[in-house]
Length: 196
Image (cartoon, rainbow, N blue to C red):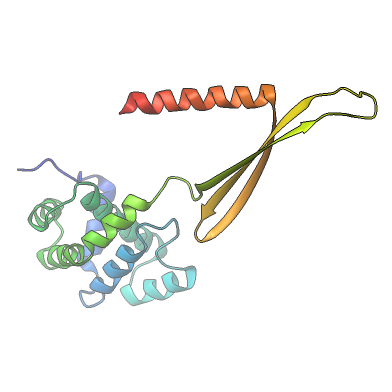
């Protein structure tokens, strides 16, 4: 027997009751939509789509929200555990999901597992990723009140990529500020190295 992927909380048991009562002809479409959006930080359905879905599935807003959250959680757990179809089927049966719904969920998982896992692997905690770094050193050598001034300034430009859009963040550092920033990066690097 495999370690359980799900625990029979009152919330999950409540969701299972609603899932078991869903129209079997509409259920596969619901699962497909969840699997298409699982890696995104957006709702599975827009407000308008949710309103139509509530009528179509004969559920209220809170019930639909619970169903969507539970099914999303099931697929996230399946992805995390890289669940084989037989294992996922067994785990879902332990939640008392009826056989027909279990088969439909497992079939949806089999058809989409590779794509979902690949998309979740690429998902990051933040919406922006560093894609490029540019730097420049400038030296201020004079000012109206001081003729022999040497004031070095480091300019750093970070290119932050977020969904096909690149945002440029520019920062200016004095020598002292840049040295302090460098030391902070060294601390972060040593902590990352310690995790390996």
